[in-house]
Image (tube, rainbow, N blue to C red; front, top):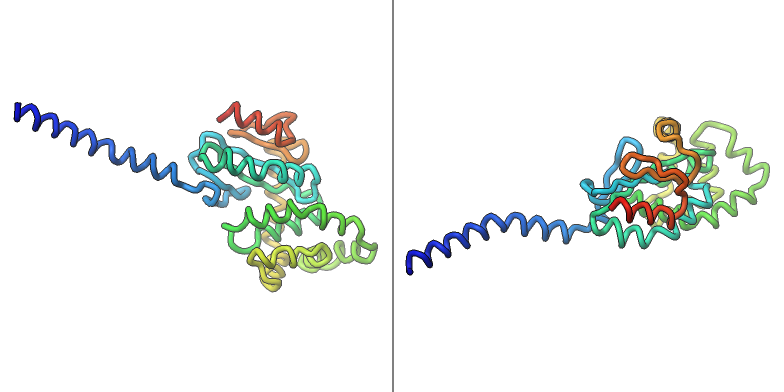
Length: 233
């Protein structure tokens, strides 16, 4: 009987030893805050579990009102219901349609990459305000946006649309943002990447979404995307 008891205890100990790494891994995954797990990619910025079953790429333009609507509607439910669980990762890629888009993209990409989504969210959620300002600009202001070197044009847009004020609480001092807005190499890279990605996926407009490498045809709103995510994850 004593031998049998010892054997049973040994087997139990062995099972627990084998199970321990799996239990710890599961606990670690459950505790991971995927909403604060960021990375940069060749074409954009990603948040979430790198090994997520569902990979979502959102193609957005900062001057697109439908993109701002999508951000407002999707922000909380996407983060709480999909990213946090580790089921879905989200990558933002720029679509550059005009000089304002470029100035906004240079602004959100300035500084610490780990704060990109904070700046992206602020830019999108305040779009109605700064786009209203953009639509009310004078011919003289618009001329400043279109003349001079790239840095001068981008800084004029950022100044007129209050990007400096918007980004100061998010860790970007004026001098730092000035340097980013004057970075012609990075501006060229953003524009060329936008054009290449648009051609690769045949992006019809913004916002558009790619799930696991496939463009979602006719999906441009949060309600449509949510249904697609539920089906894929």
